[in-house]
Image (cartoon, rainbow, N blue to C red; front, side, top):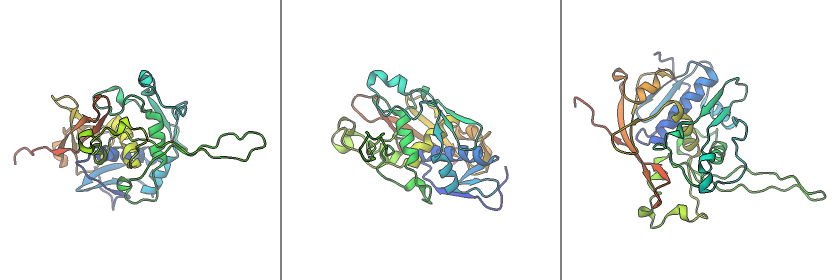
Length: 285
């Protein structure tokens, strides 16, 4: 563990928001793949990453935006039906420009942690969310916006002008607790998922980076269904160590624990969302 002259990357974070916490883990994963030897830590409501060279937040986010899903990972442009859910929840593989290695994502085989279901196409959601990130934004975890599929340019019919096809609006994974808390029918008076025309704002950086962060960094299950715990850490740690810190097994790194629920947000008890975490009582206090 070594803290350099100053972190190259700092982002504001609410550590009690599980989506933002695991999005920080995703940033650290990407920084290590881009520049090697990255170390990250939590400093109050800031997550810091020390990298070698002249790495920056904008360069990191741009590389993530420019990454591609291998094979048919970008999807076929169609949503799934309930019967096709398992096919649409297949693993993804991400390739980065100029990188020989690829990142495989398949953690959602653990269904208690998976938030999407039914006709939600994970490949299309991920592709839209990461593409909507503004790499120039200094606070990406607070950049809320309407997210749509990328604009497509269908092949024009002979004699016709080139035309653009507007992308379909995309709902998020509901990792961001700011969205999950507002997604319950009891809170809004009806189920938004039952009305397909309704689409609200989301934070594309949180939704897409959280999907990456959860691959290596898993929260600790508890005795209650769909309830998990995770821990922050205040000392610089590398990727080989951070998964152990997340489950609270490194007492010497200044950790703080949180508990959250991946709660059902529809009457059908299929769609879920991460809820704001509550701090765990510190032992010895």
